[in-house]
View 1 (tube, rainbow, N blue to C red):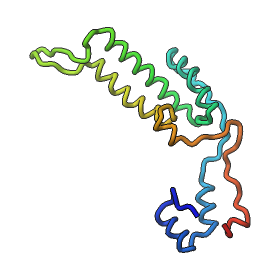
View 2 (view 1 turned 90 degrees about the vertical axis):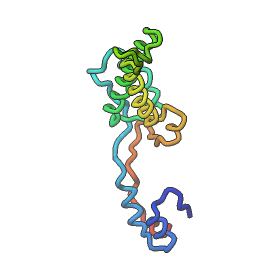
View 3 (view 1 turned 30 degrees about the vertical axis):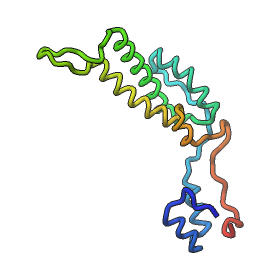
View 4 (view 1 turned 180 degrees about the vertical axis):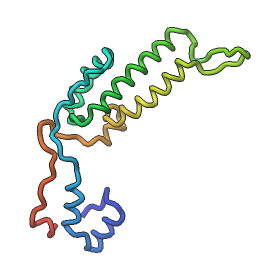
Length: 161
């Protein structure tokens, strides 16, 4: 009997023998019911974001990570990737543009560098959600393309398990 990944109440109920199979199957039945299909590319992606979409989405779908439900999140990921690339290009184009001199003679962070850092922060979070970095890959739940992820109906034997 494994208690790993269960809430304290659920684990205690199972140890006490009061967790009923119906309660457990009701919790499992609340999972989303969808078929894993290739996400359609949004028509309003910029050209660069569309190119990035074509590069990553087929790989993510083949790996069983994305479905058609992920279109909006993938759209944000692709556009944010392009924004980060553009900001990084501006920073690199202007040598030492991470800092700029103010009118009073002090230095501060350049707007391009600030935008690049903000985009990088959002991009890193999105990449992790889609398992596109080492730590994120451990957390991603995969789906099988073309198969329904609908939970099976509880059998009469569940109450004995």
